[in-house]
Length: 246
Image 1 (tube, rainbow, N blue to C red):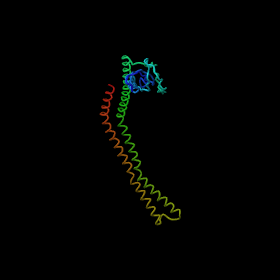
Image 2: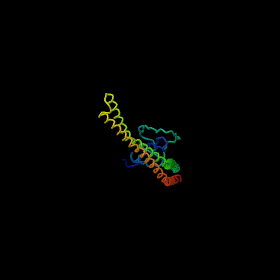
Image 3: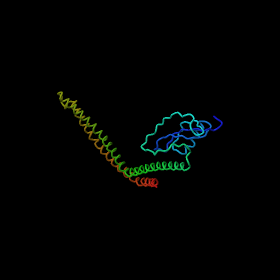
Image 4: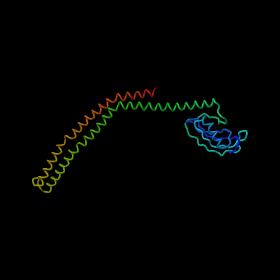
């Protein structure tokens, strides 16, 4: 580190905003070391650009020309559909008017981002209102679907009884085909099984219809309860929407 300040040419990369591509520039500062020159340049530039990155610093002569050419730096520009107007490479500190212009531009960009965020919030709130208004119907349909599934499973005991009766009937047919009679002991046993299983199947026919009836009642109750909650919920959401729009 030297004892006296000398001129340094600091090369930096900067961007004016989110949609702007990265550019490079240089600035002349007085400092006692390379580290100090980079630090001073960064403190001067950070108030003028949205993004600043110091790349290198080399000593300069009394006229601000670099004594040693800085190493070439490859810059990969960010691709953007927005093509900014060409900006001259700054070689001096910005004037107060230019700084004010940069500040106003940053404020405008932040305001645009806030506007977009607010629009997204309004659209989301409107969707929530529509969803709340249709919730009774959706809840009723869901309850109805569950009831139909339960109605289907309610037939299982009846189908099991019919399957047993069918199996006994097939066994009796095979017994007769083998030359036996359905009046002998085994044939009579099969006939009794067919009658018993058929009666069991018929005795549980009420189960699916009872389940269906309970499902219908539950669906109606769900619809009524959901319908009662809608006005209060919609009013609350509409108040939140007014605040967003206001």
